[in-house]
Length: 101
Image (cartoon, rainbow, N blue to C red; front, side):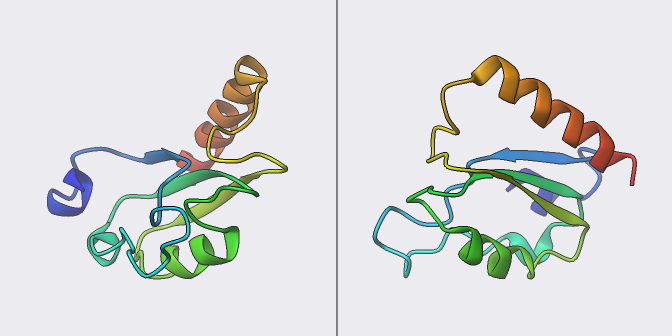
């Protein structure tokens, strides 16, 4: 939300399991600030996250005028899985590649 209010405060956003809405309550979206984001954003998101499906996330990030990318974590829920060390390395590598864009 700070990045939406103050453009240029950071060079890129890494969002891990962004909670689009509470589980089973898709009408309670947490995306009102998305149209104001001018910062490139990488979303690492589990394919089975109850806080928002990948389809919902794709629709939501369409409102962000900056560059965006979704890194799907196949089979993971909101916790992004159990291999945290290996996953962290993959996410950091993806974020570094993304912020070079």
